[in-house]
Image (cartoon, rainbow, N blue to C red; front, side, top):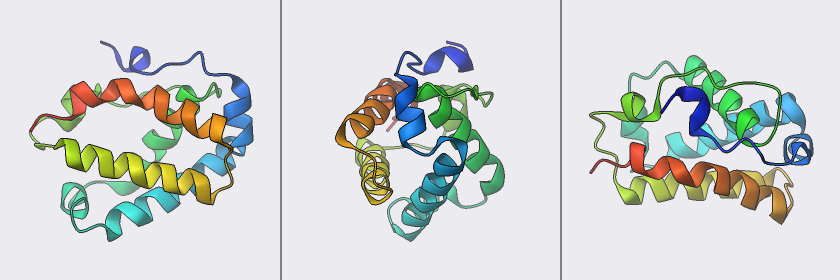
Amino acid sequence: MTAGSQFVTDTAASAYDSLGAETGLRSAVDKLYDRIHADPLLAPYFAGVDMPTLRRHQVDMLSAATGGPQKYSGRDMAKAHAGLDITDEAFERVVGHLNATLVETGADDGTIRAVLGALAPLRPPIVTA
């Protein structure tokens, strides 16, 4: 699976627009990682990670997943998460933090479902423990 094919990209562009386009996605990603870093289960997964690069890739990934113009150019999900022993619980916590972040940013239910639905296929290559 190539990096570009990892995401469902047929989501209506209105999801990208309703999230505030790139500016809104950047803000949401910042809020998401604030939540993640405050979570004692998840914070250790991000120790030593180049967060500016990760945030940029996350914005691109969310753009691609919501019909925006950016394309994800980061590593393959399986390779990027190899050796991290990510559990189902950790994956669900990240999804929960993303959901809460999207609610906080004022995203409507349809947009939230579209984002979470586009990311759901990423579970198998990410969860390895």
